[in-house]
Length: 71
Image (cartoon, rainbow, N blue to C red; front, side, top):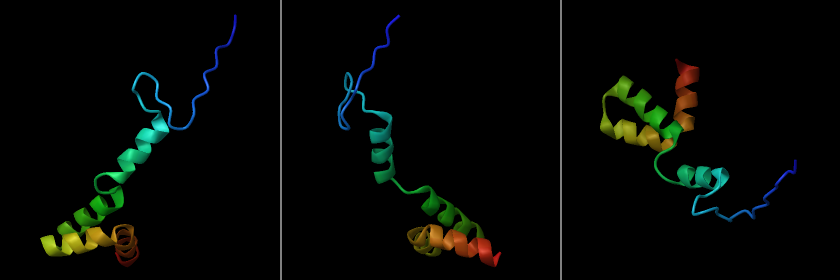
């Protein structure tokens, strides 16, 4: 029995499918982050205001950590 090893360069694709780490990087660049979504959810549940939810979503993890320490 032989072992077949395929060495791919960082940006190489196999039959048009990107490697897992390349896909993860592109997903992280698009959309809102988990921290922003969590901050918006917390803010909405407390204040019921779209303006505050947007502001807290901008601050993302900073607001989530602040909420965790002040709660």
